[in-house]
View (cartoon, rainbow, N blue to C red):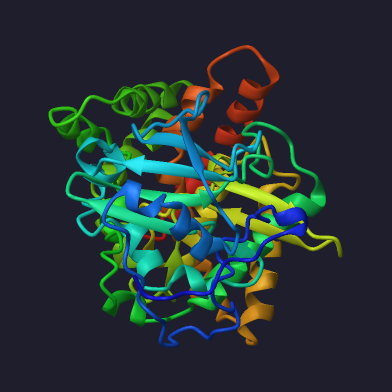
Length: 393
């Protein structure tokens, strides 16, 4: 294993959650970064001496327990790691078997991207306000594991309304992520195996779900199909038919975005994968986990995906959120964006992100409570904007 400095430790010897503090985040996009080798097994990664080396903590013993109450749509297994008999866990482990992971199958993840973005140093280059929360990784024949600080106290609660500062921090961090990797072609050159945009844009396709059901049992496939079937209850059936065809074959979206600026797109920027950590000076760091399907593509795909997932959580409406994102983007880039080209890229990219959220929105829209009503109102609001975006491709 190559040597790497320990991650930062907070007051009292506790991990402060900044597992990405291994290298300075002041590195510019495209800068050379070291390559980190994953451990050959979970046991090797969890040797007390290795945890001491990684964290700087004088670790004598570790206790590992399965994490109860952790829900996952991918079949991943989660564990908590306790250091020296402490009552509170210090680390969290995500173990993945790609052959049993619907996202890995749907997006053809042959490189184990969650490991690759760590081992190739991409996560070390995240902007200062984004924490990728990876301490180390292990990889073996049938699977891999990601070791993270225990960030459970910082994770967002899906469905809970955010405050203005919190909501603003998420949008600012998303723009900063995109600025950091803006037109960084090294992302395509490194051995990252990033997700092909076409596979992401179609990964909630009912057609694809039907095919994958033959390879793997997962409730997600039924949810995708049921969500698409429910959509005509809330928006025009003709629009749903056009959207469904585009989800099955997103080639028109790719063609419309062919000239779009490209960047690192996380592609799963939603409350379940986000956390917020506030520092003593009031600054907010966004914790961003689950790096299983990042891609190199139009930044507005991320924006659309985030907007589609956060009807309940966002403190601002869509137009205000988009305007804030664009403002942060322009400031970060240091130059204006061509308004005519950007308008097409923005609307088509947002449509691409929405394509992979609206089937789940339709499932959440069924019901009599206020959350369902909010989701129904969001779908109705999006319908004319999606139709207008369709006219651009």
